[in-house]
Length: 123
Image 1 (cartoon, rainbow, N blue to C red):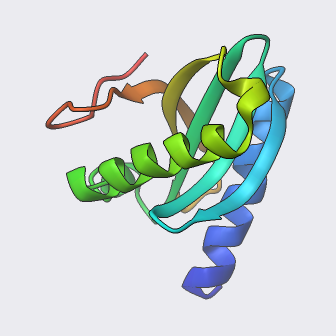
Image 2 (cartoon, one colour):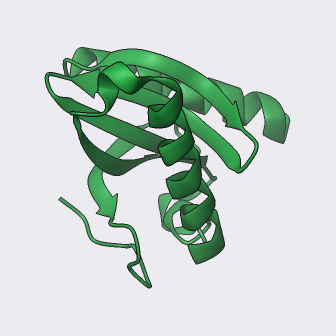
């Protein structure tokens, strides 16, 4: 399977995993002038901006999210909320869904906070 197709299937798996966990998908591949967000999901008053990483080994996936990429996602999240003012009172979180070569998704809630240097805490 090509890298692009593998990435798309990983995003689909991530969306289904999050739906099964009670989240509603608000946006998929949300593009903004400052960056792109793979998935934006909501559960109650919480908005999660989700980066999906697909690699043959899960350990490789988490290291593929660079500090620059986190900053781009953070700016894109600000843009998303600015475009959707009804969400301005919601709490935000940045999550990661890792998908390995076997296709098993791993949801890391609150994977980083804006301004953190390494962004690799796990809940």
